[in-house]
Each structure stands twice: as C-alpha cells, then as structure tokens.
Image: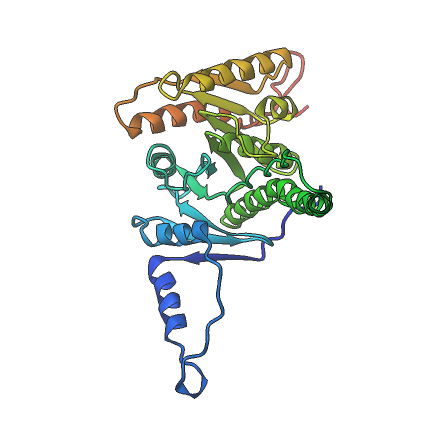
Length: 322
C-alpha cells in the first residue's frame, strides 16, 4: 500500500531549546539598525496552546514536533522505564482535549511507561466546523443569482476540508508510527480516548497490513464532526486484536449504549480478536486506571511468541542418529 505520508521533519525540542530558539529569533536586528515592518500574521490558537503546553511539561517528557504536509503537531514522548520495552503506545485524545489531559492521557502515558512501554501522546488538529445551512428567506432576483453563485463557491471550499481532515489525521498517525519505529519499536498499540477512539480505529485499519498493531478503545463515543469515522462500520474490517474498555454510568449513558452496539457488531461478525471489558465506574485514583488498562493489554494484546522447535524424540524402533 502506498504510504500516506512522508514526514518532512521530526524535531525533538526540550523546553530549554524551544525557549532559546524563540529568544534568538526575537533578538535578530533589522538591516540598518531600524525595526523592520512586520507583516500581519493570523494567530493560530491551537498551535499557540500546544506551544504553551510544551513549555509546561514535567521532567522526563520530551516534546516531539511532527511535521507533515499540512500540520505541525505536538506529541509527548515518554520512554519506558526498562532497557527492553514491550513496545510502544500511541495515544489519541478526545475532541478538544490536549495530549496531556489530566483524567486519562497523562496518567496512562506516564504510568504505562513505568510498566515497560514507550508512550507517544498525540495532539489532533481541530476538526472542521459544519457548513452553514442555506438561507430559506425569499430574495430578489439579483441577490438570488449572486447568492446562488456564492453558495456554490462556498460548497466547493467547504468540501475540501471535510474530505481532507481524515487524511491529515492519518498522516499524523503515520508520522507518529515512523517516529517510534525510528526508536526501535516494532510492536505498536493505538489507544484512542473518547472520540479519539474512532480515529485510532481508522488508523489501525489503514496500516494493519504493513505493521504489527493492537488497538485500545477507551470510553469510545461518536465524533459529531463531519466526516468522522464510525466505529461500528470500522470494527468488522479490523483483523488486529481490539480491546474495548468503557466506564458507565459515570461517563454517561450514551457510552454504555454505544458499547453494547459494538459488542453486538463483534458478535454478529464473529470478531475473534475483539474483547470488551467494563471498567469500574468509580476509581479511587488514576493508578487504578493504569492498572486496569495495563492488565488487559497484557492479557489480550501482547503478541504471542511461537514455541521453539525441538528435535523429535526417537521412536522405540529408531536409534538416535540413525
């Protein structure tokens, strides 16, 4: 299958180097000693928030900026606390959550690293907004003609981002996998939380033929953004092991209903590699979540090693070596 993305650049920035680069760029003098006029640059709120997050990371976390054709994406790398890790996890957050979200991604990316996994938490681009519905009020003939042409033009411009958003996410996921592979990790698990579960499933299906992958869905919920993947449609297409974890009713009734729908889909399509578990709704602390997820990963997603071949034992009427 043709590679979806060729990452242009992977830059690992610590807080010190990031601040040093920023200070150096601000200190460059203009020609002739006069301040050069600055062109207006439109702010990018999400990128600014990610840069602020990168400056506030706890020790031990490495801010890795992945650059694809369309995005500059912050990912948080946390190395395993042992010389030979089991593999690596790529964590995708819920919509409007950052990759160090305190209730799920932060404890998982740090806690699972303590248990022998490299982790890479990924920030996803902001999903496209739904298109504005056409006006229904009567209009004059002149304004109607103008409006129809504008509506057609707007439809053309709106169609592109809705179609390309999924491709952008896939390119980011592939860049994340390539980065972990460059660190020597061959077995990768995609973990999606909330609406990120659908994107993790789509990424797993996209690359399951080329890589050894596993998939974890955590409190999966539908993504309301246009063009978002549908888990019930994706599940029958997956041949890799899938671990579906959810926590009702604390996380809301819709999550429980969606979990039952996914279980029925897996049963109907006889998905032997699909495993669903209901986690305790109330956990005393984040360590419980880490232990629950780690235990089920070790039970259902760890690759099985082929038994070593042994020399056949000689039969009663056969002499050794004869």
